[in-house]
Image 1: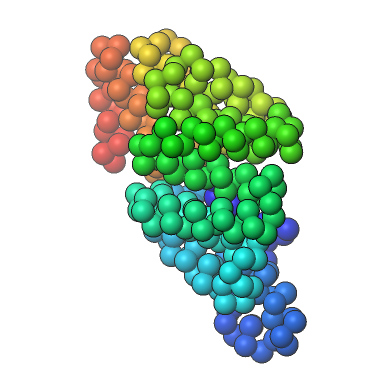
Image 2 (image 1 turned 180 degrees about the horizontal axis):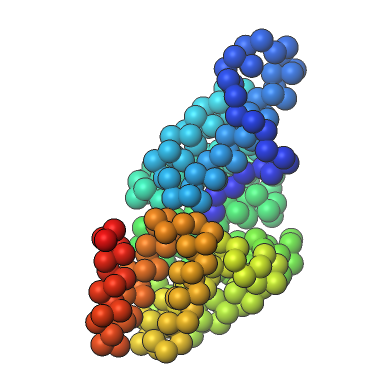
Length: 274
């Protein structure tokens, strides 16, 4: 997951100029604020589907954090994790894994194995392995992260529920559909209560559960979930966001499987921009 430190959004200005004129102790404080602002902007760009811009800015945030705050400051480690997530989204898996392992090692040394930031980094590495088609490597990390979240934050915390979702995705990839469904349903019920029905994390779980049902041929159950996810993505992220487009593809495939060729063709025209 992509993270920023939300202590109030600072304006992103002429960072180098500000740092150059500040006193040493003020520069460190200003540097933290600037890294914070850059990471928050990375999250915004990522959520808008602007992956190339987000990755470029994440690289700048990391370079600034390393220069001003040092290699194992928490904001530096967050910047590493964010850049890893950008690379993963772009399919640059080898670079992403190197960064993700570096972040996890830093959190482990500085915060300990059960700190929420360490657990998030562990779950990020599990997600990366899943994205690389390595669910057998991902599963033990995801289970370890989830168990840690449940101990530290409780079973209904949003971060715990995201870990539940991630484990469900891994079990789905392994073909364990019953367990995946149970986990997705737990995540969905909790996220609706904790974050609301239109939050991006809730919508992601709606879409994932719909995709699971479609994979199983349970299209009557899949369709309302996929339609809900699509409508939510369009409202929250826009019609061109990758999540929106992927849900369109899945819904078009569902309509084809049901012999609803005209409806499938209409969605495919939307995908083609017509």
